[in-house]
Image 1: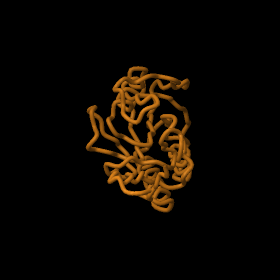
Image 2: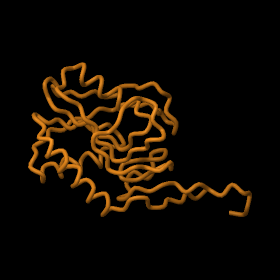
Image 3: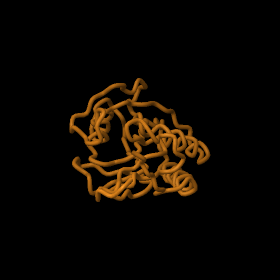
Image 4: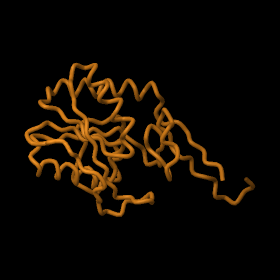
Length: 183
């Protein structure tokens, strides 16, 4: 079976939007900024965003959390599991949680509440993609790269069964023709 991936957002659009997001963060003048990437999907976005923050005059520190509500599937279980927690001191710091896609919101809501309960001064969310129609938790992103249509997206760190993370653009999986024709 061949999987077709079509481009949703190209490299240039992503790079330009990340520079704009970093400028928005810099305008907010965060103090003792800690950027927390949610692994695995956000690693490329988080890396590009902190470099853009540096160019915007900020000096963010970087940490990671590895959380999962999907397991090996493509539909959230609704239960968030911690596989790796932030090991940096979060007390009295401005934190930006970085994730590839804000969909149901359960994972980011869990992470935000966890960091606030540990003494973070503020926790804001930067999501590369925002899929509003899928929201299940009462949470919104403070910094949004792009509104995401109701498509299964891959690339730029996002995967489908561990494939397609390496794509330098954000694409979507084109549904296969199930009409029963020859393939």
